[in-house]
Each structure stands twice: as C-alpha cells, then as structure tokens.
Image (tube, rainbow, N blue to C red):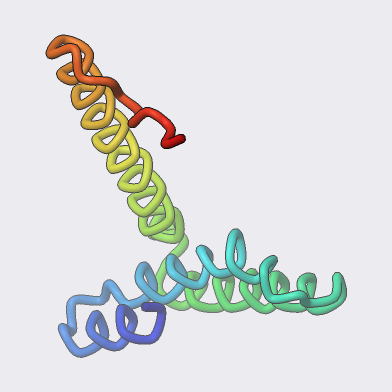
Length: 111
C-alpha cells in the first residue's frame, strides 16, 4: 500500500504524495516492523530513516504540512475501530434476536 499510495498520489499531481508515502511508512514503523523479527538495532535504524525522510521531505515542502504524517495512520486506526464496533453491534443484535426467539445461542453438545 505504501508504494501504490505514494505513486498514485504522485501521478495525480496534487502534491499529496508526502502524506501517503510517509503516512503508510509510519504504519509500517509503528505496527508492522515489530512482527518481522528484526533486532533492536534494525528497528532503531528503520525509525531513524523514517524520521530523517520525514524531516527532509517537510523541510522541502513546508513544515506547515507536517500534520499530514498523522492523517493516514489516524484514518486507518479510526476505520478499524469503527468497523470493529459495527461487527460488535451486529453480533450483539444477533444474540439479542436469538434470545428473544428462545433459540439457544450455542448448539447443545452431541452425546
């Protein structure tokens, strides 16, 4: 998603490529790199590269746009929690409907 989002934003020509490139890179740094089995040294190196890239990009395009770095991660996490809430509500409504009808929620064990 990082490469796709950044390239599509670049080709659009609207100047939003830093938001997509650094936003999705931020998601990698915050969540995904920790599941790769990297050493602590490599994790710090990746974080340092991310911070350096962010500083270089926003020094070039303007520090007033620095909040763009947070937009993609915030949208991603808010979307996940909203979707989880929708699923939770759906499950609760399903269980409520079954309990009102008197249908057991769990099938009885076979003997």
